[in-house]
Length: 242
Image (tube, rainbow, N blue to C red; front, side):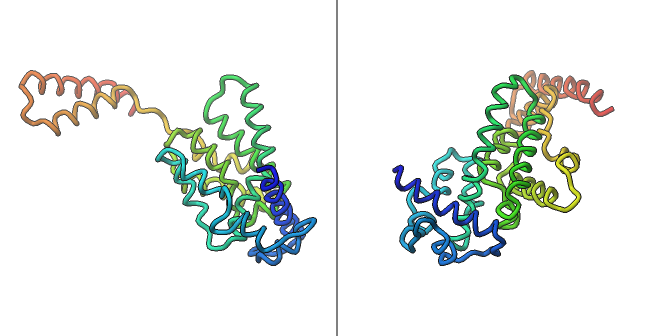
């Protein structure tokens, strides 16, 4: 297992080096193999990034429970093996930044989800500035572990594709000359803030309507109580609307 991981890292380093040196994306497998140190091979390349690679990144997401995190696997459906390798290289390169971010979260104690999301983007953009060529590859796609983290922060109120687009935009904006992290955050703040939890009265209203819709033969008293709940809910919601 350790040997296979070391092999993977040698290919990640090769991709990182090629992109940093200005080699255009897309890369070819021959480019990557030639860059691997001490020596690369076609077999090694496809063991790391081929369609039958050992422990491929998409597989880890497909094993997740159904939901937004599992949908991250769809973002990794790339046309070529070099593109799949770039995805994995992004995660490998970004991982130390992610570990540092999580460590700081543990130290910070109780913080709002909006603050956590903004901190995530700050860390991601710090990585992008340090690795601009790698961050720009695959149309500024973010490391998928950062997308996963944003999905967890938003508690299912954001889909995988939407999270991907938010972080792509963040990277693209930050790598624009003259841009700053604070400026990017200012533009993205509405998208990073979790949607407000509906007022309790709103839930009661929805439940009452659902009851009446599903069971038109409910006893008179039950229907009367449901209507009363609806009126109470409206009283709660009206001040909010003002």
